[in-house]
Image: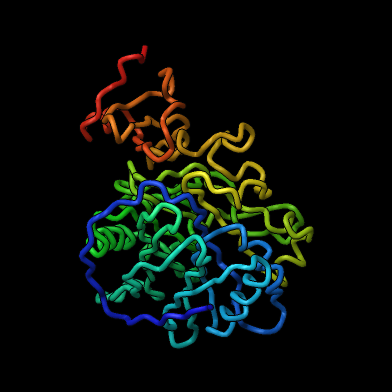
Length: 361
């Protein structure tokens, strides 16, 4: 049975203690071009791509009926029940859209706390939307927030909202205490722009190279506007973060894909070891550097610094033993994904109370 939830625009405080350590699911973000506007969208094609994730934050939703049609297509494609949690319409008088979290009920459950950010300072033209979810596989709880940053007339029009995301990230930590959180969406700005500096003191983007918007030239991509941010040292067991080459998955060229699906490619983030995203085609070179060709996990390649770009070999801590391992340590690859805590440096691992493994050179 498909269920819809509408949220209030007021802030909501949640009292909960817990930590998501091993969700074993795939979480995604996708700007689906003006979903519900006109009659050109192929919901069957959308479902063929979206079925490979368990939870997707969707931007540019024009109406609830579009989500209803997408859920029906997903249920026909998977045989599972799918649900959605929708925001109310947000935006200016001239243009409004909704956010939606769509999820496969066999693997993900809505936990609580669906809320549109109470933007008292009127900092966002489209206020972010967030909620907490639970993995049905592990029982772990995590928070997901999504936003569609103003495009405007140029980059300068986007910087103010980007800079306000640092305060929003802090707010998420207060509203969902002791809960791992992810911020995802269409940011309309490259993650290496200096406007990100404040947010990147405490959060890091999972995609740092390549592009997510479909060029009109077949096979080409432009602009790394879509992304997913997580806390530095996040306990989430992130094993992969990729830009999905959905035209290749559908066997379509870019012209047809842009007309009937979207001009943005989705980003899928794997938590733990699910199987539903393993064989997806990825945009060439669009993951954190070096990951695609070797098929290795993202855990050792998360971005570490706003100034240095991709951090190719992050320090891995073991949450059970409070021991950390450098990439040159013998047991670096032996830590269970559920127990990995990522640190951009040894100094940060030590500051968090971890000690170097005794078998490290």
